[in-house]
Amino acid sequence: MITRTVPDIVVGRLPRYLQALEHMYREGIKTTSSQELGEAIGISAAQIRKDLSQFGEFGKQGTGYSVAFLVEQLQSILKLTRIWDLALVGMGDLGNALARYQGFAEHGFRITAAFDNDPEKIGKEVAGLIIQDSREMKRIIPSLGIKIAMLTVPASVAQMVAEELVDAGIRAILNYAPISLNLPDDIHVENIDPIIKLQHMTYYLD
Amino acid sequence: MITRTVPDIVVGRLPRYLQALEHMYREGIKTTSSQELGEAIGISAAQIRKDLSQFGEFGKQGTGYSVAFLVEQLQSILKLTRIWDLALVGMGDLGNALARYQGFAEHGFRITAAFDNDPEKIGKEVAGLIIQDSREMKRIIPSLGIKIAMLTVPASVAQMVAEELVDAGIRAILNYAPISLNLPDDIHVENIDPIIKLQHMTYYLD
Image (tube, rainbow over all chains, first blue to last red; front, side, top):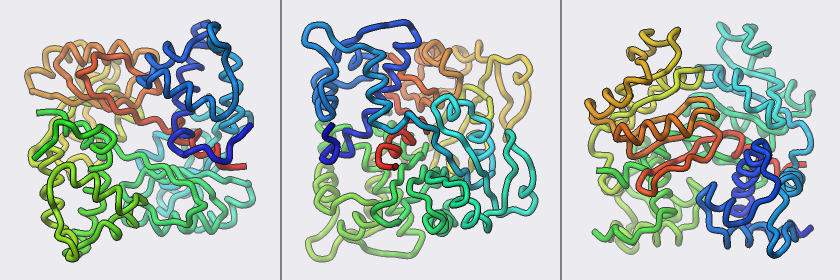
């Protein structure tokens, strides 16, 4: 498998392919084509074939892809054949909603630790998690081997908390704070910001 | 201003430029360069210059961009010089967190109506909004002139509810349900799915 030269934009499309394929799998669909997959997610068949070809030969000319096999391959490429522990940092409304969201566990992500700096919140339980003091991150995160954090703190402190997470051994941050984090190049950051998405769509409205 | 041929991927970067520029503006920074802006958000200076050139001449060779002027121009291009009403559909944990999120109002987005189909939730108040019966969407949404919806219903009903929203006059959907919606081409959909973002990052971890 050749993975070292795959552009990040291609990697970013793989989870969308996987999501659509898992949906097909649950619906009992055994085989699919790049056309069918493309229609389901709004990406061209040619793009899908090109993206997948970066990782090997997964389909046969004329017969298409085995859904189960392609699900398995994509899970393996994306390192999803194991459980990933997550730290949830910032237990406001959004942090609470994420703590209760079932979707993480369904996809092999387990929120293992939740942190806040508010004495009113520390020690409280949310969805089976005891909220811990964020000053303890540097001790707790390495001790649990957590590499991924979801950051749901206010924008004003997000950069500082992100740096503390990196110091604690975090390698990937899903950033819900509406700012661009400035972190070392080897730290992977993905941003989730509804405002950015809404502003993208208003361009087309009148 | 030439806008008709701008690729969607370019449009999608404009809100990120705007976010960084608004941050500079709040910090009192008067002028910036494509280099500085690029470093702040991790996009190359050349890409930023090329993207902005699609919409006109905003900077002067050697002196860079006026932050205030560029903020104003991007707000105008993205149609952000007005208030946009939003419908929030699905008042579970995430819907509740979004209803309480201050960031929408700060950026000219106003949640004007909230809907759910759960009789236990209908009539309750969240952040000053009375949750309304989702069977009333087709009457209420057009009467308020709402064009944008945030969809936070379970995946199993998201497609059906999205179609109801389109029938009610919604033109743009911010979809939090973890499925690809299949809607007419003139409906704008943006997806927010933490699982997709996490699976993108696990590729790089070990």
